[in-house]
Length: 172
Image 1 (cartoon, rainbow, N blue to C red):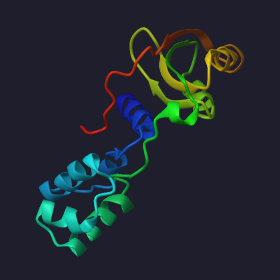
Image 2: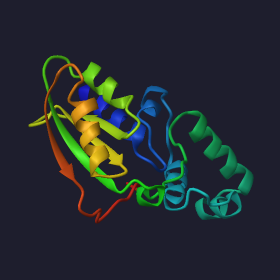
Image 3: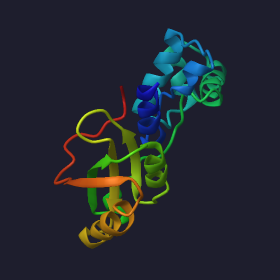
């Protein structure tokens, strides 16, 4: 169950077209056409039904119905992916957090912080991994020192500032 929570945390924040583990709970059966629809939308989330339908062997109307079924069931969501630097967010980092006690309240508190992109509960050296975006190094310092390290149960943090993002993809 813990690994399912980890995946839910990652998928909750990952921008793009997402496969949602909730679909497993809803007993949604995905056939090859559904999977092909998902693959196509992962490449182009704005693909018109007039192109999507023929690409997966369906009519435009049937493709629209299939996509709507996948959306309604929570299997996928289609969202815009913005480059943080174009929004004035020039500092990105991963923060490894070691915790004392129960991790869930810490994860919940981190999830409420605006600059936090996603929170992952992990096994290994760190109890949590948190990806953040900030305007500058001063705001990163304030975020970590004044808001993250002050959360009850946070024992220590280690910051991994991104020098470059060499690959970022959401199609799996």
